[in-house]
Image 1: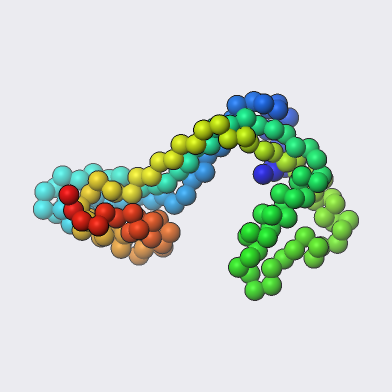
Image 2 (image 1 turned 180 degrees about the vertical axis):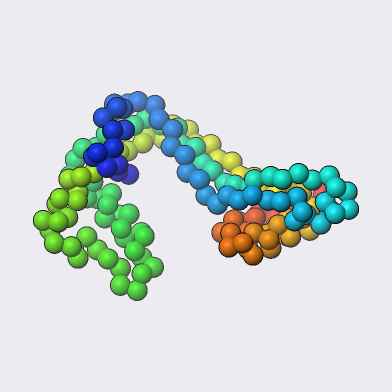
Length: 157
């Protein structure tokens, strides 16, 4: 990855320092009222559904133009891939790109441990999950709704 050269993070840390990077996917509030079982038993509480990965590792500061250009080029290709006319670094004047690249510093994390967690109402009945999925979709939380739907158990326990 990379950080802005103006960001003090890369100066305050040193090569080999232990770091934690947190990657959060979809997350949203889930009302107990979305669960049909709540209306029968009144034994539900609000919750928050989410997916997250904690990456524990060792940091390397990569203050190297070639490394930074590679990282930026890969990120650009990935994120521009769905555009009708994907932007490329070569689309900008080279002196401008030289200036932009000089304003960032590369970082690399050697992964030591990964911890993933997902809370997707998986402890609920299928009908409760299904209704929560519908409510999240109605609120434009489509990615989390799709993840919850895909993770739904095939039958109630």
